[in-house]
Image (cartoon, rainbow, N blue to C red; front, side, top):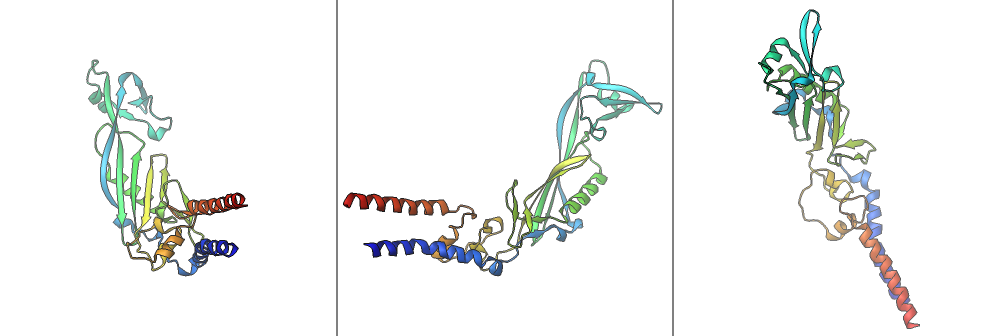
Length: 260
């Protein structure tokens, strides 16, 4: 009976040992599939969409003031930062409120969407200008400035699909991100990046395989089972397998109590 338990224990432990060996070989076998922002070509960043978020402005929230002899109007309930205030000239104000019976008008926040993609990786950016406008139109200069900002912000970043709230260190100890928030005095938004690099022969065995492109290939079932014992792998079965082992010990202990 004792020999039987020893054999069962050895069989149960073998997958753990294989998992440890796989983790130990990670630096030797895993390939670098990160998308490095420094490889981005600013000329290939494309504007893919422009939309406008509408909001309503009440006449009584617009204040009149004089600047250098000219009359200006400012939306008094906009953000506290000067760069985010809606300023209207006399002509614009009269266009919005042509007579005393017009109580409200509308303004817009401009939302730009950009994309970039190569065989190495891709990024998507959604950027909102924090200074509102009264007409649905945008400036090409803003587009070029945002492209430059995206390029600069990504230049020292490394991307993979690690989750929008996660920071992950790869097998080289480099910090890898998926989401990059952007905030300046004139705009705010987010850049999302991930890798397009194909996996190497053994990359599927490691805990970060789901953060990079995967390929459906026939794999050794036993090795595949062992890789999912890694607690850091997505959809890991470590806890379930560990629980089975504990339950086995408890059942064996209870069985021995009964037969004594």
